Length: 210
Image 1 (cartoon, rainbow, N blue to C red):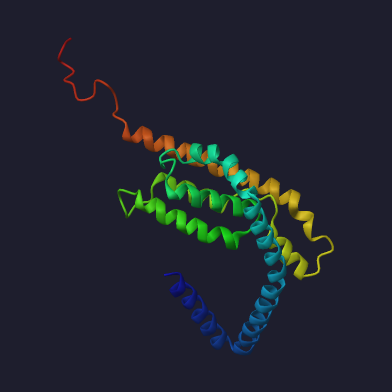
Image 2: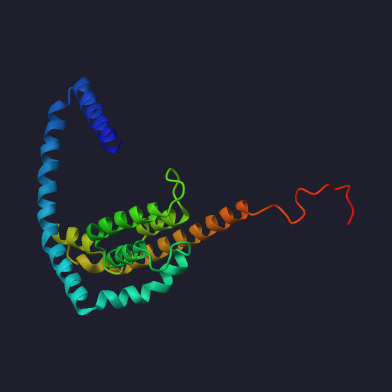
C-alpha cells in the first residue's frame, strides 16, 4: 500500500511538471536527490559502524544484559498482559535499548520481531492488542540518550558542533515518551472500564424487592 501511495505521488508530480513545462526541473531534482542520498548514506556509515561496534562491545561485556535487567521492571509495568518469560519481552528490551542509543536501524528489526511475537498472543488477529499499541507508541516516541543518526547527519554536513543537540533531544524525547505512556495508561483504563459490567445490580427488575 505504501509503495502505491509513493508511486502515485511521483506520477502526479511528473504529471503536473509536464503540464506546467517544468519537466527539466523535476529531472534535475531527481538526480540531485539521488546524489544527496548516496552522499548522506556514505556519511552515515562511519558513525553507525562505530556505534554498532560499541553496541557489540557492550553486548559481549554484559552491559546490555545489565541494561535489560534495569529495564525489566519498566517493561513488566508497561506490558502487564505479556507473560514474563515470553520471547516478545526479549525483543521489546532489545528494541528499547537500541532506541536509547539512537540506533533506529538496529531497533526496527527488533520492534518487528516483538510485534510478530505479540501477534501470537493476539486472540483477534485483525485488531491490535493493548500491548501492541504500547510498543508502537514507545517505539515512535522513545527516549533517546544519544541521537546517533542525527549526529552522523550533522557531521556529514560539517556542523561546527554536531553533538550540541544531545541535551535538547533528550528533553524532547523524554517529554514525548512521558506523553505516550500517559496516553497509553489512559486508553488502557478506558478500555478496561468499557469491558466491566455497569453495576452489580445490572439486569435486575427495579420492581423486585429484597
